[in-house]
Image (tube, rainbow, N blue to C red; front, side, top):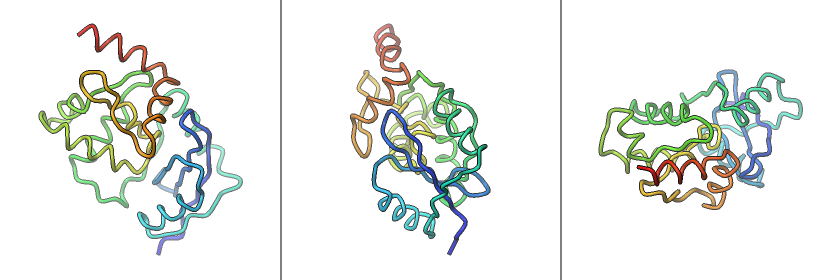
Length: 176
């Protein structure tokens, strides 16, 4: 069993975000206020109980904050999940969506070379193990509906509003 995952928490417009990391990057995150649920999720998905880091490395905190505030680069460790090339391509495309912008599931599918795979993109977003930092909230339904979001659709709306994406989403989509 792995024993090298540490975690910290940061505040986001969507609520408290638990962020787990190892020497290879961010490997798990979860919105919510239940530390127990986060620990159980990490155990289930990564096979280890993460350790709370009361004094996380300054560079980790800076990278997380830069990602949240400016869509800055951050290192992810996706290896534990065994993603397919399609799933990785979708996650990479979503990471690249600029703050304050959205893409439809169909646009992401087209971008990764799989036109018509909007539902498959939706499934990758549903199972995103690093929400907010891999901004699945920036992927919306065609026609202007923001779609669902786990654990609560109002969180998606708050995240998009905080990024200024709702105004640009509606003006851009309505102009098409």
